[in-house]
Structures are given as structure tokens and as C-alpha cells.
Length: 463
Picture 1 (cartoon, rainbow, N blue to C red):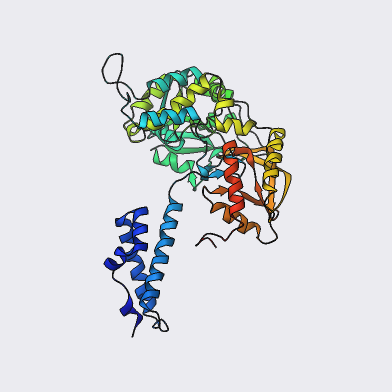
Picture 2 (cartoon, one colour):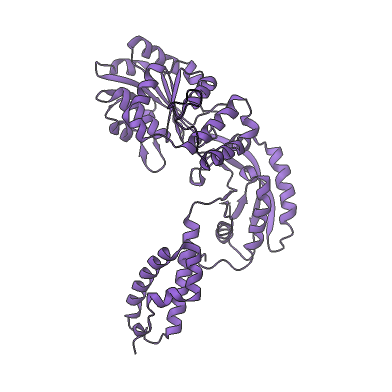
């Protein structure tokens, strides 16, 4: 008899104890959907020659096992906390900057109740949703006005659509950047409704190149900071002050996409306040990079331009929600008080010294040494800022190198990644490096548990 005749019905499966456990985890609708796919797959498999010897019980167990694997995979696909032991501070794949505890508390407060998002508590009338954030930005960056959208790419798109639609944007060929996910600045300029006017060459652009490119159709002089790369060697580019002088003399605004939102001294990264002081008309930057806040695109600069940008109908489509505003407001308050170095996690991680990390990793290594199956040593390694920021800056670190006679580096890394919570490390020279730069003190015990747990049998579906 064909094994197909032993294939249980979906209704029968949904009543089984094993499937009921899956339902309790992800819900009946989701389980029913997964079972439909599994039953279809198994019908095809059981129609092949050599599969006519499976019993009803074996088929049922196979379906239950496959369903459990799918449920486990679902739980790993959902957004969840991971421990960043890579040493990359603003790791884009891991969510970039973690929020300060104050910002987290503010988000919880605003998200769990009603708020004065667009309500003026003084007048009792409709208010502006980002008025306090705008005031804080003025204080911190010294700008006349500011507005907020959902990320920096949106800030660039909105700015150019507002002030350059139908006209030309002059920019150096060496600044036609591409960020993660093949997202290219020329494509953003095209979507804004403006036309790209490239000047100079990849490695050398002079102020005269900009001057000669200005026509009656020019709407913006643009400078894009090369956040994730550097051009070195036989190079030339005009200083920002020269571009600002050209902007003033021509009456054409100078728009600077600063990218990282830097507020402190870091090699190769422009500080926002300094960029404005040097003559930029408009500056855009990210909220979740060196600013240390939530994902957002922040636009600051001269009121005559920024207020036009804020009135653009696209601004509503690109605006941020109450939780983002709450987190950004709290982050800016920390900057305003001069407490970023101690209270914003990304700043603390970047500023951690090699000596501080050596002390931490030594204490941690003593705890790991109790795991007899592991071989460990403390080694020098370089951490990085990440997030497309400061590509030439290496942050000196002391890290824990982990190896095992019974497991490859790839197996160790995979098992750490399969732990709960997942521990994300990196491999170098055949060893797994555990960098504590971005690991909170409270997370060290979880990393230790993950190292102990990986010695045991790997979880189902991982290897």
C-alpha cells in the first residue's frame, strides 16, 4: 500500500499533543499555514519510488518534527536582542546604536499611554509634534531650524525634492557614494526630481569645477561626506569654506550630507556644529549612528530652507512616530547636558580604552577558563566604529580568542549564534574572537553560559 494513504489529515494533526504545543507558541492560524505547506511537500516526496514503506506513525512523527523545526526557525527570524561581541560598535546588521537607558524609559512611557504628540499643553490647542526636538537641535548644533524624517536617505530625498526639483544638483564625482544594499546617491537625486551634474574627477575636484558648472538651472551645490570610504593618494578637493563662499556669491544653497551625525572629535568624521559654522546652508545626518539615538534623518540649517523642507507634502509620508521622537528627544537632552560620553552606549563603547578592555577580558577569561573543553588566550585585535563611519579608524582592543580541539571555529561561531540570547562573534586566524567592547557588564554571564552551552550537543536544525 502506498504511504500516501497513511498521510494524516490536517484536522487530525491539529488535535495532536505535539501540534498543540506548537499552536501555543505561534498560534493556530500560523500552524495551520505551515501544515498546509508541509503536507503538500510530503505528498510530493511520498509519490516517489522507494517511499512506500513508511508507517502512519513514522509519517506523523516526521510532520511533527518538521513543524517544530519551522516553529524554531520562526522564533529565530523575529527581531530579538542579541549580544554584540564583534567589536563593531555601530553594527548595521545588529541595529546600529543601542539606545541610552533614559531614551528607553521615555519610549516605554510614551508608547504605553497617550501623549502630547501634537497637543500644546499650554494653550490646549493642536501643537507641533517635533517642536521640542527642534529647540534641542538649535541648542546643540547652533542651527536656525531643524526637521526630522525617518532616515538620512529620506532626508536627502526630501531636501533635494524641495529645493532642487526640476533643476540641477552639482556634486563631485568622488562623492557619488553607495551605501549598504546597493543604495546609490545618483538614484536618490534622480528620484527627487533633480538632475545630477557631476564635476571634477574621482580623485581630483577643484572649486573652479563647481564655478564652471553653475548655470541658470543650478539649484543646489552638494557635498556628500564619504562616510564608508576614503580616496587617498593623488587627490584634491576644495575646502568646505570655499564651497560656502561660492554658495554665498552665487545665491545657491550649499547642502552637506554629513551622514554620521558626529558630535565629538573622531578622525575623518565632520562634526555637525562645525559643518554649519563653516558655512553649510543645510546639513543632513543620521540619528542612529554617532549621535547614538534611534533611526532618523535629521535636517538642520538656515530657516528659509529647512522650513520649506518641512512644509513639503512628502515630509508627512516620511515623518517619524511618537516612539522615535521620544527616543530622539531623550538622546538630544543627554547631548545638551554634556553627558553623552557616559550615558550613550555607542559613545562609551567607542571611547573604551585598550587598558580598560584588557582588565575586563582578563577577569572574563578567568571565568571562561573553568570550561575545560575550551582553549583560550587574550590577544590584541582592532575593533571598529562601523555603521559606515570612520573607515580608517581602528579602535585598539584586547579580546578573548576561543578555540577547541573538538570544534572548528565555524562550529563555535555557529553555536554561539544559536544560543539564547544569540551571541554574535567573529572569526580570525582560525579562532573565534569575543570582543567585550560592546558587551554590557550584565551580559558577560550570558556570554559565559553560551560558551558552556555550545560544548553540549548543537540545537536541532543548527548543524
